[in-house]
Amino acid sequence: MPRQQSVSDLVSRAQNGEPRSVARLISMVEDGSAQLREVAAALAPHTGRAQVVGLTGPPGVGKSTTTSVLVKVFRERGSRVGVLAVDPSSPFSGGALLGDRVRMQDHATDSGVFIRSMATRGHLGGLASATPQALRVLDAAGCDVVLLETVGVGQSEIEVVALADTTIVLLAPGMGDGIQAAKAGILEVADLFVVNKSDREGADQTVRDLRYMLSLGEHHKRDGSVWRAPIVKTIASKASGIDDVVAKIEEHRDWMNRSGERERRRQRRAESEIEAITLEQVRARIGDVRGEDALPELAKRVVAGEIDPFTAAAELINTVSSR
Image (cartoon, rainbow, N blue to C red; front, side, top):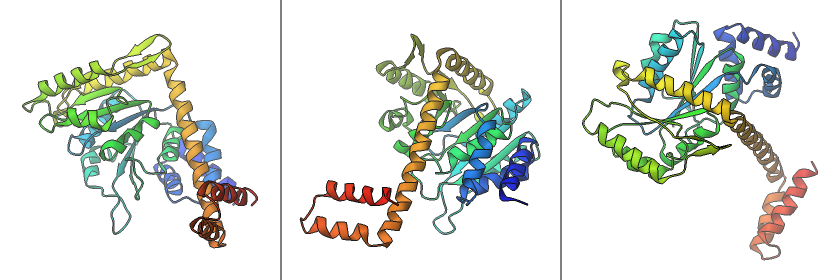
């Protein structure tokens, strides 16, 4: 069977909800398959419908538990749900550490839910480098909502905003998370704050701290409309407050559609993706040039003071461009 037909078959089966085909397409994306361009081309006409909801925040605030109960609520409303859970990579195997996924086993037999863990494989920023393409697979597979749960890695965690339509920042009382959120810069990217484990002492103080810090910052302003990130208290382990979270997600989706922010975000997402792919291809070409001694020779000339680094870089670009 021709290669292109094989990819087309996979995409067609994924659109029909076949989990094995969805899994295989994501694996091809993760592994950087030689057919990656064919996969991307086959997926492109079938994407753009799913709402991507990013969940981020420090470790231990209950992201996986919250994700699991959100899946339950969305399924009760008849939505097909995809979950991409990006885990830290094992330093030994390179695979994902999947302990938190145990909490989502309640959905393992639900044909309307697709759950996939991805290893970061050393990629900083809380997201695997293949995550944008994996989101496209789930979008094309008919998911109405895709929940993107990221590693809690501090300041680099804000990378999630480049991929999500709605970004949820989870915090918990008693962990100093309000101050840490301000330091990490995630106040600016949050569309919704969730103070989880709100049955703990200090939950109200965490909410007050957040409100105060939000009052000092800028809000999203588009075409005269304003979105002020709401704060919702939850106890995810008891599913308390989760309906309120979903209501705020839907309210934010409606605001984005009215204000045009949804299209602007997706435009920026595409720009970032194109830039990342371009840089990756340029690095690959530089690697080829390095093997031919062009880069080492330029470096020697810089060290010897014959040329400056900017001139060397320009020569390297010319060398790469001519190939």
